[in-house]
Image 1 (cartoon, rainbow, N blue to C red):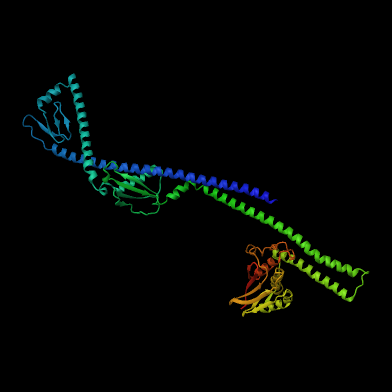
Image 2 (cartoon, helix red, strand yellow):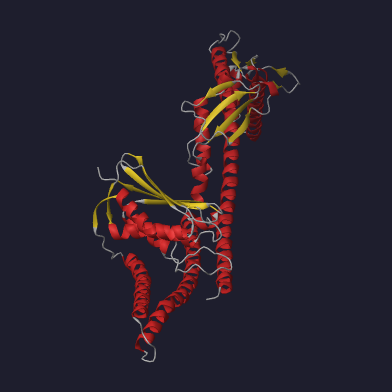
Length: 518
Protein backbone atom coordinates (compact mmCIF):
# COMPACT_ATOMS: atom_id res chain seq x y z
CA UNK A 1 0.00 0.00 0.00
CA UNK A 2 1.28 3.45 -0.88
CA UNK A 3 2.25 5.84 1.88
CA UNK A 4 -0.12 8.49 0.52
CA UNK A 5 -3.05 6.07 0.85
CA UNK A 6 -2.06 5.16 4.40
CA UNK A 7 -1.73 8.82 5.34
CA UNK A 8 -5.15 9.63 3.83
CA UNK A 9 -6.87 6.83 5.74
CA UNK A 10 -5.04 7.76 8.93
CA UNK A 11 -6.01 11.41 8.56
CA UNK A 12 -9.70 10.66 7.94
CA UNK A 13 -9.94 8.17 10.82
CA UNK A 14 -7.97 10.41 13.13
CA UNK A 15 -10.17 13.43 12.46
CA UNK A 16 -13.29 11.27 12.93
CA UNK A 17 -12.11 9.92 16.29
CA UNK A 18 -11.07 13.37 17.50
CA UNK A 19 -14.43 14.85 16.42
CA UNK A 20 -16.30 12.05 18.22
CA UNK A 21 -14.21 12.62 21.32
CA UNK A 22 -14.86 16.36 21.15
CA UNK A 23 -18.63 15.80 20.83
CA UNK A 24 -18.64 13.53 23.89
CA UNK A 25 -16.56 15.95 25.96
CA UNK A 26 -18.80 18.88 24.87
CA UNK A 27 -21.90 16.89 25.84
CA UNK A 28 -20.44 16.12 29.27
CA UNK A 29 -19.53 19.77 29.80
CA UNK A 30 -23.02 20.93 28.77
CA UNK A 31 -24.73 18.37 31.01
CA UNK A 32 -22.49 19.36 33.91
CA UNK A 33 -23.25 23.03 33.34
CA UNK A 34 -27.02 22.41 33.28
CA UNK A 35 -26.82 20.26 36.42
CA UNK A 36 -24.83 22.94 38.24
CA UNK A 37 -27.27 25.69 37.21
CA UNK A 38 -30.21 23.58 38.37
CA UNK A 39 -28.41 22.83 41.63
CA UNK A 40 -27.62 26.53 42.20
CA UNK A 41 -31.22 27.51 41.57
CA UNK A 42 -32.56 24.83 43.94
CA UNK A 43 -30.15 25.79 46.72
CA UNK A 44 -30.93 29.49 46.32
CA UNK A 45 -34.66 28.77 46.47
CA UNK A 46 -34.23 26.57 49.55
CA UNK A 47 -32.13 29.22 51.32
CA UNK A 48 -34.69 31.92 50.56
CA UNK A 49 -37.57 29.81 51.86
CA UNK A 50 -35.62 28.86 55.00
CA UNK A 51 -34.89 32.56 55.69
CA UNK A 52 -38.58 33.38 55.17
CA UNK A 53 -39.55 30.61 57.58
CA UNK A 54 -37.11 32.12 60.07
CA UNK A 55 -38.96 35.44 59.91
CA UNK A 56 -42.37 33.74 60.14
CA UNK A 57 -41.25 31.75 63.17
CA UNK A 58 -40.12 34.95 64.85
CA UNK A 59 -43.49 36.58 64.12
CA UNK A 60 -45.28 33.51 65.46
CA UNK A 61 -43.25 33.58 68.67
CA UNK A 62 -44.07 37.23 69.30
CA UNK A 63 -47.73 36.66 68.45
CA UNK A 64 -47.98 33.77 70.88
CA UNK A 65 -46.20 35.79 73.53
CA UNK A 66 -48.53 38.77 73.08
CA UNK A 67 -51.68 36.63 73.06
CA UNK A 68 -50.61 34.80 76.20
CA UNK A 69 -49.89 38.07 77.96
CA UNK A 70 -53.21 39.65 76.93
CA UNK A 71 -55.17 36.55 77.93
CA UNK A 72 -53.49 36.60 81.30
CA UNK A 73 -54.43 40.24 81.80
CA UNK A 74 -57.97 39.64 80.58
CA UNK A 75 -58.41 36.70 82.91
CA UNK A 76 -57.25 38.83 85.84
CA UNK A 77 -59.73 41.58 84.93
CA UNK A 78 -62.67 39.20 84.56
CA UNK A 79 -62.17 37.72 88.02
CA UNK A 80 -62.51 41.21 89.54
CA UNK A 81 -66.29 41.45 89.65
CA UNK A 82 -68.23 44.09 91.49
CA UNK A 83 -71.34 43.23 93.54
CA UNK A 84 -74.69 44.16 91.93
CA UNK A 85 -75.62 46.96 94.40
CA UNK A 86 -77.95 48.65 91.90
CA UNK A 87 -79.86 45.76 90.47
CA UNK A 88 -77.14 43.36 89.17
CA UNK A 89 -74.69 45.58 87.25
CA UNK A 90 -71.50 43.67 86.34
CA UNK A 91 -68.12 45.01 85.10
CA UNK A 92 -66.21 42.97 82.47
CA UNK A 93 -62.82 43.58 80.78
CA UNK A 94 -62.51 43.61 76.99
CA UNK A 95 -59.07 43.23 75.45
CA UNK A 96 -59.59 45.20 72.27
CA UNK A 97 -60.09 48.78 71.10
CA UNK A 98 -63.52 49.58 69.67
CA UNK A 99 -65.42 52.66 68.52
CA UNK A 100 -68.82 53.22 70.11
CA UNK A 101 -71.96 54.51 68.39
CA UNK A 102 -71.28 57.97 69.77
CA UNK A 103 -67.72 57.99 68.43
CA UNK A 104 -66.02 57.22 71.74
CA UNK A 105 -62.79 55.13 71.42
CA UNK A 106 -62.40 52.48 74.09
CA UNK A 107 -58.84 51.31 74.74
CA UNK A 108 -57.71 47.70 74.87
CA UNK A 109 -57.85 47.37 78.62
CA UNK A 110 -60.75 49.73 79.53
CA UNK A 111 -63.59 48.41 81.64
CA UNK A 112 -66.96 48.63 80.04
CA UNK A 113 -70.14 48.44 82.14
CA UNK A 114 -72.95 46.29 80.83
CA UNK A 115 -76.35 46.59 82.68
CA UNK A 116 -78.09 43.30 83.14
CA UNK A 117 -81.18 44.27 85.34
CA UNK A 118 -83.82 41.59 85.95
CA UNK A 119 -86.54 43.75 84.46
CA UNK A 120 -84.67 44.04 81.14
CA UNK A 121 -83.98 40.34 81.14
CA UNK A 122 -87.65 39.52 81.72
CA UNK A 123 -88.74 41.99 79.09
CA UNK A 124 -86.32 40.49 76.63
CA UNK A 125 -87.66 37.03 77.25
CA UNK A 126 -91.24 38.14 76.70
CA UNK A 127 -90.37 39.75 73.36
CA UNK A 128 -88.36 36.86 71.89
CA UNK A 129 -91.15 35.99 69.56
CA UNK A 130 -91.31 39.48 68.21
CA UNK A 131 -89.86 40.04 64.73
CA UNK A 132 -88.03 43.10 65.89
CA UNK A 133 -86.19 40.92 68.38
CA UNK A 134 -84.80 38.82 65.48
CA UNK A 135 -83.55 41.93 63.73
CA UNK A 136 -81.97 43.20 66.92
CA UNK A 137 -80.26 39.84 67.41
CA UNK A 138 -78.80 40.00 63.88
CA UNK A 139 -77.48 43.47 64.53
CA UNK A 140 -76.03 42.30 67.81
CA UNK A 141 -74.22 39.39 66.05
CA UNK A 142 -72.84 41.72 63.40
CA UNK A 143 -71.60 44.04 66.10
CA UNK A 144 -69.93 41.13 67.87
CA UNK A 145 -68.16 40.05 64.63
CA UNK A 146 -67.11 43.63 63.94
CA UNK A 147 -65.81 44.04 67.44
CA UNK A 148 -63.90 40.72 67.13
CA UNK A 149 -62.31 41.84 63.83
CA UNK A 150 -61.27 45.15 65.35
CA UNK A 151 -59.86 43.24 68.30
CA UNK A 152 -57.79 40.86 66.12
CA UNK A 153 -56.52 43.71 63.96
CA UNK A 154 -55.49 45.72 66.98
CA UNK A 155 -53.79 42.65 68.39
CA UNK A 156 -51.78 42.07 65.19
CA UNK A 157 -50.86 45.76 65.04
CA UNK A 158 -49.47 45.53 68.55
CA UNK A 159 -47.42 42.46 67.51
CA UNK A 160 -46.08 44.25 64.43
CA UNK A 161 -45.09 47.26 66.50
CA UNK A 162 -43.46 44.97 69.02
CA UNK A 163 -41.39 43.26 66.28
CA UNK A 164 -40.40 46.57 64.72
CA UNK A 165 -39.30 48.25 67.92
CA UNK A 166 -38.28 45.26 70.05
CA UNK A 167 -37.23 42.19 68.02
CA UNK A 168 -34.97 43.92 65.50
CA UNK A 169 -32.98 45.49 68.33
CA UNK A 170 -32.02 42.11 69.75
CA UNK A 171 -28.65 40.49 68.90
CA UNK A 172 -28.77 38.13 65.94
CA UNK A 173 -27.80 35.20 68.16
CA UNK A 174 -30.94 35.73 70.29
CA UNK A 175 -33.30 36.12 67.35
CA UNK A 176 -32.47 32.80 65.63
CA UNK A 177 -33.25 29.30 66.80
CA UNK A 178 -30.33 27.66 64.99
CA UNK A 179 -31.57 24.11 65.47
CA UNK A 180 -34.95 25.05 63.98
CA UNK A 181 -33.19 26.92 61.16
CA UNK A 182 -31.07 23.82 60.40
CA UNK A 183 -34.22 21.66 60.28
CA UNK A 184 -35.98 24.14 58.00
CA UNK A 185 -32.96 24.29 55.75
CA UNK A 186 -32.72 20.52 55.46
CA UNK A 187 -36.46 20.24 54.81
CA UNK A 188 -36.38 22.89 52.08
CA UNK A 189 -33.39 21.24 50.39
CA UNK A 190 -35.22 17.91 50.36
CA UNK A 191 -38.31 19.63 48.94
CA UNK A 192 -36.10 20.91 46.11
CA UNK A 193 -34.67 17.47 45.38
CA UNK A 194 -31.28 17.87 47.13
CA UNK A 195 -30.36 15.12 49.57
CA UNK A 196 -26.75 16.07 50.24
CA UNK A 197 -24.60 16.77 53.28
CA UNK A 198 -24.03 20.47 53.88
CA UNK A 199 -22.27 22.84 56.28
CA UNK A 200 -23.40 26.36 57.13
CA UNK A 201 -22.45 29.39 59.16
CA UNK A 202 -24.34 32.52 60.23
CA UNK A 203 -22.63 35.91 60.33
CA UNK A 204 -23.61 39.40 61.29
CA UNK A 205 -23.67 42.26 58.80
CA UNK A 206 -20.12 43.29 59.80
CA UNK A 207 -18.72 39.76 59.22
CA UNK A 208 -18.68 38.41 62.77
CA UNK A 209 -19.54 34.72 62.94
CA UNK A 210 -22.30 33.94 65.44
CA UNK A 211 -22.90 30.28 64.61
CA UNK A 212 -21.18 27.37 62.91
CA UNK A 213 -22.71 23.91 62.48
CA UNK A 214 -21.09 21.25 64.74
CA UNK A 215 -19.57 19.12 61.94
CA UNK A 216 -18.31 22.10 59.92
CA UNK A 217 -15.37 21.62 57.51
CA UNK A 218 -13.86 23.80 54.77
CA UNK A 219 -14.07 21.07 52.13
CA UNK A 220 -16.07 22.38 49.18
CA UNK A 221 -16.19 25.94 50.57
CA UNK A 222 -14.76 27.35 47.35
CA UNK A 223 -18.34 27.12 46.01
CA UNK A 224 -20.68 28.59 48.64
CA UNK A 225 -24.18 30.06 48.69
CA UNK A 226 -25.31 33.05 50.77
CA UNK A 227 -28.69 34.40 51.88
CA UNK A 228 -29.48 37.60 53.80
CA UNK A 229 -31.47 36.99 56.99
CA UNK A 230 -34.11 39.53 58.10
CA UNK A 231 -33.58 41.39 54.85
CA UNK A 232 -36.35 43.94 55.59
CA UNK A 233 -34.75 45.04 58.85
CA UNK A 234 -32.26 47.92 59.02
CA UNK A 235 -28.98 46.96 57.37
CA UNK A 236 -27.10 47.00 60.66
CA UNK A 237 -29.46 44.36 62.10
CA UNK A 238 -29.39 41.89 59.20
CA UNK A 239 -27.35 38.69 59.03
CA UNK A 240 -26.02 36.30 56.38
CA UNK A 241 -26.30 32.51 56.19
CA UNK A 242 -23.50 30.87 54.14
CA UNK A 243 -23.94 27.30 52.92
CA UNK A 244 -21.59 24.91 51.11
CA UNK A 245 -21.58 21.22 50.15
CA UNK A 246 -18.45 19.03 50.59
CA UNK A 247 -19.59 16.48 47.97
CA UNK A 248 -20.89 18.93 45.39
CA UNK A 249 -18.55 17.73 42.62
CA UNK A 250 -19.57 14.09 43.07
CA UNK A 251 -23.21 15.13 43.03
CA UNK A 252 -22.80 17.25 39.87
CA UNK A 253 -20.82 14.65 37.93
CA UNK A 254 -23.09 11.79 38.99
CA UNK A 255 -25.52 12.87 36.25
CA UNK A 256 -22.91 12.31 33.52
CA UNK A 257 -21.31 9.21 35.00
CA UNK A 258 -22.97 7.03 32.39
CA UNK A 259 -20.92 8.85 29.72
CA UNK A 260 -17.57 7.88 31.24
CA UNK A 261 -17.49 4.32 29.76
CA UNK A 262 -18.28 5.70 26.30
CA UNK A 263 -15.50 8.26 26.68
CA UNK A 264 -13.05 5.60 27.87
CA UNK A 265 -13.91 3.27 24.99
CA UNK A 266 -13.45 6.11 22.51
CA UNK A 267 -10.01 6.89 23.94
CA UNK A 268 -9.10 3.18 23.82
CA UNK A 269 -10.23 3.00 20.19
CA UNK A 270 -8.22 6.13 19.38
CA UNK A 271 -5.09 4.69 21.02
CA UNK A 272 -5.63 1.37 19.23
CA UNK A 273 -6.04 3.20 15.93
CA UNK A 274 -2.84 5.19 16.47
CA UNK A 275 -1.00 1.99 17.41
CA UNK A 276 -2.36 0.27 14.29
CA UNK A 277 -1.18 3.14 12.08
CA UNK A 278 2.27 3.01 13.68
CA UNK A 279 2.39 -0.76 13.10
CA UNK A 280 1.36 -0.29 9.47
CA UNK A 281 4.09 2.27 8.90
CA UNK A 282 6.65 0.07 10.63
CA UNK A 283 5.53 -2.89 8.57
CA UNK A 284 5.78 -0.80 5.43
CA UNK A 285 9.25 0.35 6.44
CA UNK A 286 10.22 -3.22 7.30
CA UNK A 287 9.00 -4.35 3.89
CA UNK A 288 11.15 -1.72 2.20
CA UNK A 289 14.15 -2.74 4.32
CA UNK A 290 13.51 -6.40 3.54
CA UNK A 291 13.44 -5.62 -0.17
CA UNK A 292 16.71 -3.72 0.18
CA UNK A 293 18.10 -6.63 2.14
CA UNK A 294 17.11 -9.12 -0.55
CA UNK A 295 18.68 -6.94 -3.24
CA UNK A 296 21.83 -6.44 -1.20
CA UNK A 297 22.07 -10.10 -0.26
CA UNK A 298 21.65 -11.10 -3.90
CA UNK A 299 24.49 -8.79 -4.82
CA UNK A 300 26.67 -10.06 -1.98
CA UNK A 301 26.00 -13.72 -2.82
CA UNK A 302 26.66 -13.24 -6.54
CA UNK A 303 30.25 -12.18 -5.90
CA UNK A 304 31.49 -15.37 -4.17
CA UNK A 305 29.36 -17.55 -6.42
CA UNK A 306 30.84 -15.90 -9.52
CA UNK A 307 34.39 -16.27 -8.15
CA UNK A 308 33.86 -19.95 -7.31
CA UNK A 309 32.23 -20.56 -10.69
CA UNK A 310 35.09 -18.86 -12.54
CA UNK A 311 37.77 -20.76 -10.62
CA UNK A 312 35.95 -24.03 -11.27
CA UNK A 313 35.76 -23.31 -14.99
CA UNK A 314 39.48 -22.57 -15.12
CA UNK A 315 40.26 -25.83 -13.35
CA UNK A 316 38.05 -27.75 -15.78
CA UNK A 317 39.30 -25.93 -18.89
CA UNK A 318 41.80 -28.29 -20.53
CA UNK A 319 42.99 -25.63 -22.94
CA UNK A 320 44.54 -23.68 -20.10
CA UNK A 321 47.87 -24.90 -18.84
CA UNK A 322 47.80 -25.31 -15.09
CA UNK A 323 50.85 -24.91 -12.99
CA UNK A 324 51.07 -25.98 -9.39
CA UNK A 325 51.10 -22.33 -8.30
CA UNK A 326 47.98 -21.60 -10.36
CA UNK A 327 46.12 -24.59 -8.97
CA UNK A 328 47.04 -23.50 -5.46
CA UNK A 329 45.82 -19.99 -6.18
CA UNK A 330 42.52 -21.22 -7.61
CA UNK A 331 42.07 -23.53 -4.64
CA UNK A 332 42.66 -20.63 -2.25
CA UNK A 333 40.11 -18.52 -4.15
CA UNK A 334 37.50 -21.28 -3.99
CA UNK A 335 38.22 -21.84 -0.28
CA UNK A 336 38.07 -18.13 0.63
CA UNK A 337 34.91 -17.47 -1.36
CA UNK A 338 33.27 -20.58 0.12
CA UNK A 339 34.05 -19.32 3.62
CA UNK A 340 32.63 -15.93 2.69
CA UNK A 341 29.50 -17.52 1.26
CA UNK A 342 29.10 -19.72 4.33
CA UNK A 343 29.54 -16.69 6.60
CA UNK A 344 26.81 -14.75 4.78
CA UNK A 345 24.38 -17.65 4.92
CA UNK A 346 25.27 -18.30 8.54
CA UNK A 347 24.50 -14.68 9.46
CA UNK A 348 21.03 -14.88 7.97
CA UNK A 349 20.34 -18.22 9.63
CA UNK A 350 21.51 -16.90 12.99
CA UNK A 351 19.09 -13.97 12.88
CA UNK A 352 16.29 -16.35 11.87
CA UNK A 353 17.15 -18.59 14.83
CA UNK A 354 17.09 -15.60 17.19
CA UNK A 355 13.62 -14.62 15.95
CA UNK A 356 12.35 -18.12 16.72
CA UNK A 357 14.33 -18.25 19.98
CA UNK A 358 15.86 -21.61 19.01
CA UNK A 359 19.51 -20.66 19.30
CA UNK A 360 21.41 -22.89 21.76
CA UNK A 361 24.53 -21.55 23.45
CA UNK A 362 27.42 -23.69 24.59
CA UNK A 363 28.13 -21.77 27.80
CA UNK A 364 31.37 -22.18 29.72
CA UNK A 365 33.69 -20.22 31.98
CA UNK A 366 36.21 -18.04 30.14
CA UNK A 367 38.75 -15.40 31.07
CA UNK A 368 37.64 -12.30 29.20
CA UNK A 369 41.18 -10.89 29.21
CA UNK A 370 42.55 -13.95 27.44
CA UNK A 371 39.64 -14.01 24.97
CA UNK A 372 40.20 -10.37 23.99
CA UNK A 373 43.99 -10.85 23.69
CA UNK A 374 43.47 -13.78 21.29
CA UNK A 375 41.10 -11.75 19.11
CA UNK A 376 43.51 -8.80 19.05
CA UNK A 377 46.38 -11.02 17.92
CA UNK A 378 44.38 -12.43 14.99
CA UNK A 379 42.87 -9.07 13.98
CA UNK A 380 45.88 -6.80 14.34
CA UNK A 381 47.10 -7.51 10.76
CA UNK A 382 43.95 -6.02 9.24
CA UNK A 383 44.28 -2.85 11.33
CA UNK A 384 48.01 -2.52 10.63
CA UNK A 385 47.22 -2.87 6.93
CA UNK A 386 45.43 0.49 7.18
CA UNK A 387 48.54 2.09 8.69
CA UNK A 388 47.27 2.06 12.25
CA UNK A 389 47.66 -0.09 15.36
CA UNK A 390 45.63 -2.01 17.91
CA UNK A 391 46.20 -0.94 21.52
CA UNK A 392 45.05 -3.02 24.43
CA UNK A 393 44.74 -2.19 28.14
CA UNK A 394 44.01 -5.14 30.44
CA UNK A 395 42.85 -3.65 33.76
CA UNK A 396 40.14 -6.10 34.82
CA UNK A 397 41.11 -8.02 37.96
CA UNK A 398 37.90 -10.09 38.12
CA UNK A 399 37.63 -11.28 34.49
CA UNK A 400 35.98 -14.74 34.57
CA UNK A 401 32.65 -14.79 32.71
CA UNK A 402 30.14 -17.45 31.68
CA UNK A 403 29.69 -17.15 27.89
CA UNK A 404 29.51 -19.00 24.59
CA UNK A 405 33.04 -18.65 23.19
CA UNK A 406 32.11 -18.71 19.50
CA UNK A 407 29.24 -16.23 19.67
CA UNK A 408 30.99 -13.87 22.08
CA UNK A 409 34.13 -13.93 19.91
CA UNK A 410 31.91 -13.02 16.93
CA UNK A 411 30.64 -10.02 18.91
CA UNK A 412 34.19 -8.64 19.35
CA UNK A 413 35.08 -9.50 15.73
CA UNK A 414 31.99 -7.70 14.44
CA UNK A 415 32.75 -4.53 16.38
CA UNK A 416 36.39 -4.49 15.22
CA UNK A 417 35.34 -5.32 11.66
CA UNK A 418 32.96 -2.32 11.67
CA UNK A 419 35.82 -0.14 12.86
CA UNK A 420 37.86 -1.21 9.81
CA UNK A 421 34.92 -0.87 7.39
CA UNK A 422 33.83 2.61 8.53
CA UNK A 423 37.25 4.21 8.80
CA UNK A 424 38.57 7.36 7.20
CA UNK A 425 40.17 6.15 3.98
CA UNK A 426 42.79 8.89 3.94
CA UNK A 427 43.94 8.38 7.55
CA UNK A 428 45.35 5.39 9.44
CA UNK A 429 42.97 3.62 11.86
CA UNK A 430 43.76 3.09 15.53
CA UNK A 431 41.69 0.70 17.66
CA UNK A 432 41.78 0.71 21.49
CA UNK A 433 40.59 -2.28 23.51
CA UNK A 434 40.26 -2.05 27.28
CA UNK A 435 38.96 -4.30 30.06
CA UNK A 436 38.18 -3.12 33.60
CA UNK A 437 35.91 -3.72 36.58
CA UNK A 438 33.34 -0.91 37.02
CA UNK A 439 32.19 -2.74 40.19
CA UNK A 440 33.32 -5.88 42.03
CA UNK A 441 30.68 -8.05 40.31
CA UNK A 442 30.94 -6.51 36.80
CA UNK A 443 33.47 -6.52 33.99
CA UNK A 444 33.48 -4.16 31.00
CA UNK A 445 35.07 -4.38 27.56
CA UNK A 446 35.35 -1.29 25.35
CA UNK A 447 36.30 -1.10 21.67
CA UNK A 448 37.15 2.44 20.60
CA UNK A 449 38.27 3.52 17.12
CA UNK A 450 39.33 6.71 15.37
CA UNK A 451 37.03 6.20 12.39
CA UNK A 452 34.26 8.29 10.84
CA UNK A 453 31.93 8.24 13.82
CA UNK A 454 28.13 8.14 13.79
CA UNK A 455 25.56 10.95 13.78
CA UNK A 456 23.43 11.30 16.90
CA UNK A 457 20.24 10.70 14.89
CA UNK A 458 21.60 7.32 13.72
CA UNK A 459 22.96 6.06 17.06
CA UNK A 460 19.56 4.95 18.37
CA UNK A 461 18.86 2.99 15.16
CA UNK A 462 22.14 1.16 14.55
CA UNK A 463 21.03 -1.93 16.51
CA UNK A 464 17.92 -2.41 14.36
CA UNK A 465 17.91 -5.22 11.83
CA UNK A 466 18.70 -4.27 8.24
CA UNK A 467 19.53 -0.71 9.25
CA UNK A 468 22.70 0.71 7.74
CA UNK A 469 24.16 4.15 8.28
CA UNK A 470 24.10 6.17 5.09
CA UNK A 471 27.55 6.82 3.63
CA UNK A 472 26.50 9.21 0.87
CA UNK A 473 27.47 8.22 -2.64
CA UNK A 474 30.06 5.74 -1.42
CA UNK A 475 29.08 2.07 -1.79
CA UNK A 476 32.38 0.42 -0.90
CA UNK A 477 31.09 -0.92 2.45
CA UNK A 478 29.26 -4.20 1.95
CA UNK A 479 26.80 -5.81 4.38
CA UNK A 480 23.20 -6.60 5.22
CA UNK A 481 22.71 -4.38 8.26
CA UNK A 482 22.61 -7.46 10.52
CA UNK A 483 25.99 -7.20 12.28
CA UNK A 484 25.12 -4.84 15.15
CA UNK A 485 21.67 -6.42 15.55
CA UNK A 486 23.48 -9.75 16.01
CA UNK A 487 25.88 -8.15 18.51
CA UNK A 488 23.11 -6.68 20.63
CA UNK A 489 21.11 -9.93 20.57
CA UNK A 490 24.08 -12.02 21.73
CA UNK A 491 24.98 -9.58 24.51
CA UNK A 492 21.40 -9.51 25.76
CA UNK A 493 21.16 -13.32 25.70
CA UNK A 494 24.29 -13.37 27.87
CA UNK A 495 22.45 -10.99 30.27
CA UNK A 496 24.83 -8.19 29.47
CA UNK A 497 24.48 -4.60 28.36
CA UNK A 498 25.96 -2.74 25.40
CA UNK A 499 26.32 1.03 25.11
CA UNK A 500 27.63 3.21 22.28
CA UNK A 501 29.21 6.67 22.34
CA UNK A 502 30.14 8.35 19.10
CA UNK A 503 31.04 11.72 17.66
CA UNK A 504 30.94 12.34 13.95
CA UNK A 505 34.45 12.68 12.51
CA UNK A 506 36.22 11.58 15.70
CA UNK A 507 35.31 7.92 16.19
CA UNK A 508 33.08 5.49 18.05
CA UNK A 509 33.29 3.50 21.29
CA UNK A 510 31.21 0.41 22.13
CA UNK A 511 31.13 -0.69 25.78
CA UNK A 512 29.95 -4.16 26.86
CA UNK A 513 29.28 -4.85 30.55
CA UNK A 514 28.67 -8.35 31.95
CA UNK A 515 28.49 -10.19 35.26
CA UNK A 516 31.62 -11.91 36.53
CA UNK A 517 31.78 -15.28 38.23
CA UNK A 518 32.82 -14.88 41.84
